[in-house]
Image (cartoon, rainbow, N blue to C red; front, side, top):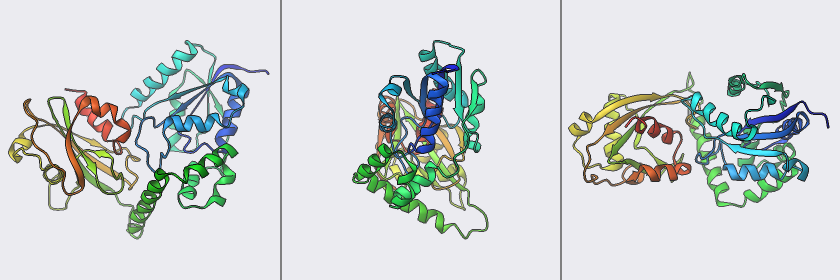
Amino acid sequence: MQTKYQYGIYIGRFQPFHLGHLRTLNLAFEKAVRVIVILGSHRGATDTRNPWRSPERIGMIEACLTPEKLQRVHFLAVRDWLYSDNLWLAAVQQQVLEITGGSNSVAILGHRKDASSYYLNLFPQWDYLETGHYPDLSSTQIRGAFFEGRKGDYLDKVPQAIANYLQTFEKSERYTALCDEYQFLQAYKQAWATAPYPPTFVTTDAVVVQAGHVLVVRRKAKPGLGLIALPGGFIRQNETLVEGMLRELKEETRLKVPLPVLRGSIVESHVFDAPGRSLRGRTITHAYFIQLPGGELPAVKGSDDAQKAWWMSLADLYAQEEQIYEDHFQIIQHFVSKI
């Protein structure tokens, strides 16, 4: 086999892996001696956009490859860094370097289909190989058909091994929960369908830290039912951002700290506005960092939209990253990295 490159790189979420992905991967095997598949959205909480964890997606792809190709493929997984391309790039570059040893014979494969493909322009050190567009193959459409039970609209768009996997997955509790959340989100968006303009929601979140612990809640409503989150919610029309943040903080956690103390302990605020940060739609959140002095952790109790409220150690926070709602892990990281 005549190959041009020592390494071919293919980046994607593969949620799920479909026939277009398989064609691109086979092209990578034609063009390179070894292939590096990089999976995005690593360690994020599962939801209707990312139903499968990294090990599950790797297993799905492996099931589509021959023994010979399995010997030539490497799998890497990287977190999403919604607010820092440089951190994401550093993670990709470091892991790739460990495999390639700095080889200059590297190509990245892909197709610039929309704004989500901008990452293909971030690697000028690698040659770019255009794979072409497969207009009839879309993971978004496949997921929609999957959650709506329309097998005829997706089974012929995925490799047989993936079709088998999906039909087994349909019997799981996670599939049932994801279908419930999918239906909720569809109804949520439909409720705004007659608005004269697409809605933009404004929310607040409180990042309260004391003695190496951050105050978190467990959500008791969709979306994100049961996930760990920051206390927060939608702003009301008759309140300022700070007032809304403090109201939600008190309502959801019953934090035993006087409001004047909380207000006086606000160290910093930041706007988190990644367009795809929330599955509900365009949602911009204003997060406030509240640093309380050391000492005994104040009493808290889950209330309102929270099943439970508690002080989580920063070590536990990192260990439970896969259970954290939306981009709240990255919001917390933004502030605590400055302590």
